[in-house]
Length: 184
Image (cartoon, rainbow, N blue to C red; front, side, top):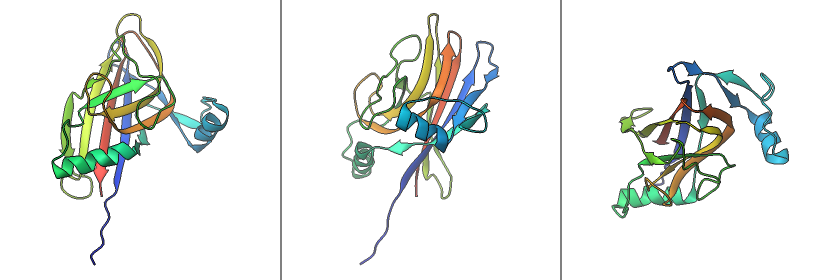
């Protein structure tokens, strides 16, 4: 019997820009922040204790149970919808949908600006989605979750998601999400 295993893992990169296109710093949390958030629902952003400030926050994602099924469906030709959308929210993340998805002021879910294949370890073993959310007048959000979906408007199935310390955005800001999923 031949035994092989496939692992699905991903990372998400966040970059925040002001209205003039200048990069803004955001907080990259660590395990202490995760513990405080999970146990006490605290979002303490203390430099070098619960994380650090950076211009490019990178964090591993969580592939959902349904996400694994979506991948199997894609391989078997059984999928009815490809995974093309990125959504953001202000909740604490869920296992089938975002907890509190943003639907206004430029933060609405939509198709990725680009979807491409990348080489991480072996040729084209990674799929990459990139989407930039540009916030309009009236926007003021503390974004804490992000996810990949197979529906560009609402509902659908979530392939993967992540939660993170709050990224505060206002009118004129742009948040670029790069979500990569690697098969190894």
